[in-house]
Length: 257
Figure 1 (cartoon, rainbow, N blue to C red):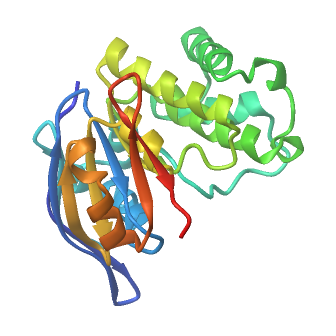
Figure 2: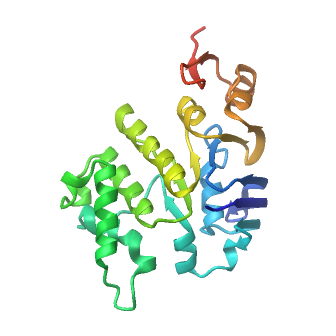
């Protein structure tokens, strides 16, 4: 289980600031949902946490500064599924997911029986086992998205960073994916940070929400504190209704004039 802390995290591209002074903490085994309008800095936040973009401030996992870790150690600590990954040409689903085991392979870079067992388990849980020998380029957009998540899950890290993981998925696969992430939290104590456009799903699965606007924290708290008509009207310029659901969470539905 891993405690993640952000302190004054800022980032940008080519001298243009995108993210400014973000501070928060995600308890071990917790789930932080990062929401906000387009261009608010959600994806940049995850990249800054990983050290993929130039940034200021600090990111620590169980007191260890991520910026001070070697790449292999960082890959054992933080798993990442980007929204728009660069997929290798001609690679099968199995071989791609096996890349998630790279931090654990020996000097010869050969996978062990344990590595293969982990990959098979992940493929089965993400409904990809029948596509295991298919080439990535032959998959649909939703299938590729699941393969990207499978690679991140195969890393078996204490922290999982997912950038819009339900993009391109039908509602059934989107629910199954988020259910699996939630299971991992409870089974292994995985700490989860996701960016999500779907506010209803964000409120159903995340324990804590962080709303970004123009790269700054505009609202933070439990889903019921952040997902209100006033907050969403102010930050999204949206007309919505907040409806209670049987499980105690809320649904965010658009309202026509």
